[in-house]
Every structure is written in C-alpha cells, then in structure tokens.
Length: 303
Image 1 (spheres, helix red, strand yellow):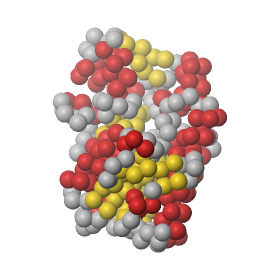
Image 2 (cartoon, one colour):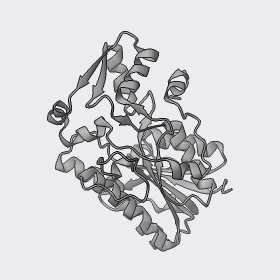
Image 3 (cartoon, helix red, strand yellow):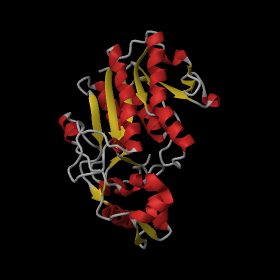
Image 4 (cartoon, helix red, strand yellow):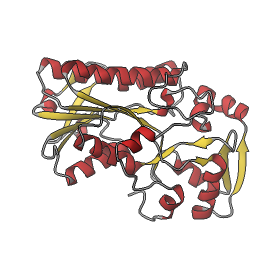
C-alpha cells in the first residue's frame, strides 16, 4: 500500500481527473493538481504552461506518483492548430514533467498515463492485444507517441502504466451525453455499421483502475481499459431508448456521410476497433460496472 503518498494529477479540469482525485483523497493519498488556468491555483492546485515549458516545481515536491490525464479534446476539429494542441498537451506535457523531475531530482515511484484504444489499427476481426503494433493513422501516431513519452520515465527507474482507454461512459460528459440528448429529441443515432462493436468503460471503473495500479506494484506496462461485455452500435441505442427515451427512432448515419461531416474524426464515432481485456482480467481487477444495462439502470451512475 502506498496510501499517504503524494500524487500529482494533470488535466485538473477533466471529469476523469476529478473522479480520480475524489477517490484517492478518500483512500488517504495527498493529491495535488496541475492546471493551465492560473485563476484556479490554490494550496493544492499549481500552475503550468506546457507551450512555454513552465511548471511550478513546488507541485512535485515530495511527489511519489504522477497521473497524467491532461489532453486537448480529440473531438475538436482536426485543424493543424488543434492537432498541435492535442499532441503537445499529451506528449510535450509528459516531457516537461520528466525534465522537471530530473532537474529537481524527484524520486518518483509511479507514472500512470492515459492513452487510448485509438493506438490500434481498426483492421482485422480479432480483438487487439497490448503487444499488437500501433496503427498507421494520425490518431494511432498520437497514442503511440503519448505512450513513448510516458515510458521514457523508465530511465529514471519509475514504474510506468499506460491506460488505453475506450469510450468513457458518463452521463454528464463523454460520448453518452449527446446520444442521450439526441434520443430524447426523438432520434437514436447509429454511426456507420450498426453491427460495429462499441468499446466502453464506466468512468468510475477507469478511476478505480488508477487507484488499483497505484496500490499494486505488479501492474506495469500498457492495459486496454474496456468492459468485458461488448455492445454493438444498435444494442447501445436500444438500451438508451429503454432507459432514457423509449420513443426515439433509430437512424443510421452512413460512413460516407460521417466522413463528409467529420473527416478523419469519423473513426472515433464508428467503433471499428475491438480490444482484448484478458491482460486486465489477469491482474485480478474487478469492474464495478461490467454490464452496460446495469450501469444505465443505476440512477447515480454519473455521480
């Protein structure tokens, strides 16, 4: 057990970071945050500027673990300027953290970084395993470089864990919110092929894994974070109808229309990548929300 240790979390404004902070504080960790909004700074929230390479090194004083969750949203338009923000907020940020730790001789134990199942190619029918090669598109390149920047902490004899996160299930944010709103307006939107698998994980389970990884030194390397129970696009909409908008009419938006509207971002919506969670199961991790229907039944699942 490492409770009582100081943990630094990046991405302070994100929903997952807030969940992780709440959970770790409850477990007895000392939690501090990094923010790019100087107005949010207080005794436990410190300022950094990734572009300028600036960070309040007091945030890392006596720090034992870093949980790197910051990242400019990939659902924003993929303009060159936005792609640079997406890249720098993940990869450049990790380098800034490592350089600062090296300069100030911070004796870290663990570096946990978010990543994404976008790391993989969507080709083939077999679920992707953690030792599979990355894809060749821009999203795969982003995830691959993101993880590479995390693994550089191993040079400092730091345990590194990369979480290849699937779609986060949370009614207040993430992919579910617009689908529920659309259904309540009468349209159950299916993106591309209705038989495509949607890889998902409840946001509370993603936060739980961070705690699990901190408390178990045998957790090392990359892990696919997804539910054991897969759902198709059509099954997802059926369940949304059942629990939120029973009169919604399922409407399929063809792949070519998605490509016209969203460009290369369409790959995020279609859910073509399947992943294996055997490595995660083998660690002994237990999901609190393994089943989508049960997750949607719980009135408090987004809190």
